[in-house]
Length: 434
Ligand SMILES: Cc1cc2nc3c(=O)[nH]c(=O)nc-3n(C[C@H](O)[C@H](O)[C@H](O)COP(=O)(O)OP(=O)(O)OC[C@H]3O[C@@H](n4cnc5c(N)ncnc54)[C@H](O)[C@@H]3O)c2cc1C
Image 1 (cartoon, rainbow, N blue to C red):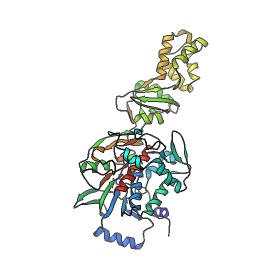
Image 2 (cartoon, helix red, strand yellow):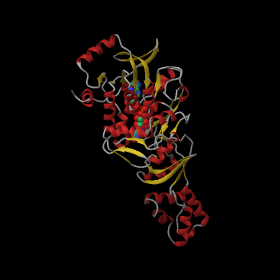
Image 3 (tube, rainbow, N blue to C red):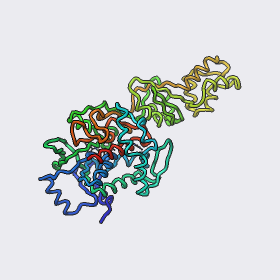
């Protein structure tokens, strides 16, 4: 018998095909296809249909399947786990050692995620990774990556789905869902499927070219749930005409502290041809709204006022840009000296002027004019409001059997493995409740 992943591979025929492809784990037999024929006329209800075979949907499917539930997992792409595959530069930052801390997640209800995160922790996911012999390492700040490839995480989840007898159907566009006579009905171009429970794991609209949609929000509204305004998050920010000088710095990166309100991140920032990126900026973008200004400490841990005034005493004839070039990449030092109006030897500048310039270096104000939008956003902030969901099971309080999990929900993690941890934890919580 072919392995589950080989079976799946054999049925993959290329991105963008419109035909419907079905596979179950292990590979379908002629008997399965005969059963499928019958299902198109008299659908036997599944215990659960899960829409979206991303991180959350796969975890939910394997959990429910291994609990003996009859599970159908649907996705309109030609593969499962498309975002897992490209995550972490192809090595998947699959969790964070601090992934259980609810303060690493943004939500209109900051307490909502605690229940699921507390019951399925980073250690639980690491145990699964270890059981599959996948080597991993901590890169920085508790971020765990595969030594090899993100494909290993997908193969692991597929294998666990196989153990749970999960039936996966790819290239399957869901046209509508409804709830009648205690059953959920899921319409696809190839017929109707029915189930006792329905899990919406279709993520958010970030990176539409990868198949991302706002489908979860449509379903939520259809069933009377509120949707917190979805916004791009973990996204590069763009700068306006007044900061055009910084465009010449495209490719320059440096360690900074980026702050906005109480949010504060010490990581690298990167100048791009349109604005600002890098981990510190991506993190702060989740807190940013149009009109907000960021404070960026370009010399974290150093008092730049002292740096300039001390330099004036030690080397009065030195140019300020020479001093700045000792601390910053040359191109950045030159732009900063220009923006600060520091030309001519240090001795020609009053101490007060140098102190003001130094204070700006420790708290440079950028007022972005926008972001790169959903096309470049790693995640979506906002989503299905937690008000209408039960925090233990992620079920809609007023629609028994209807669950929302993963990025579709108004819970968004920091950069660094937190979003996958939420996907695993919320998927597990729903999978255990079905
Ligand atoms: C480039 C990139 C890198 C990332 N790197 C990391 C990382 O290293 N660590 C981390 O923690 N997070 C990372 N993330 C974020 C992480 O990928 C997401 O938070 C996570 O995938 C969300 O899981 P999900 O299952 O909720 O949604 P998704 O993974 O988005 O899965 C949703 C699934 O639903 C399917 N779908 C959507 N609409 C429909 C529809 N109408 N019908 C049928 N199927 C549908 C989609 O095809 C998709 O397969 C990254 C994101 C991106 C874009």
